[in-house]
Amino acid sequence: QVQLVESGGGLVQAGDSLRLSCAASGRTFTIYHLGWFRQAPGKERESVASIRWSGGSTYVADSVKERFTISRDNTKNTVYLQMDSLKPEDTAVYYCAVRSLLTNKYDYWGQGTRVTVSS
Image 1 (cartoon, helix red, strand yellow):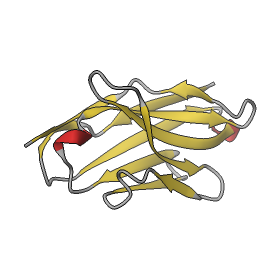
Image 2: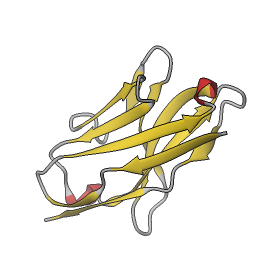
Image 3: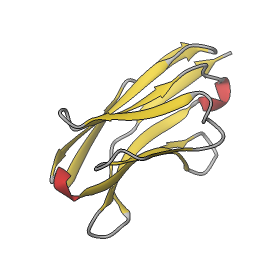
């Protein structure tokens, strides 16, 4: 299994920046991709960004591409989501998740970290 712990959420004002962290532990050698998702109140969960654990290729959703960056520090088994120029519509609970090499599915999820952007 892989355990994930997110951190870095909080209450900020529009235009501010936040950096979310997702620390992975356990069977990290089974990680294929690590992704960030978010779920706003009353809305479906959406994919925000992902990074290939080995190789580092990235994906960032078009809706946030100009403002969000995903990166990783493999020495710390940690993936970051840098969020700049935050908008009230970025308000959501952000989750990181692992797509497993074994199943090619997002099998492991963190507990989530709340981001609130005030106008």
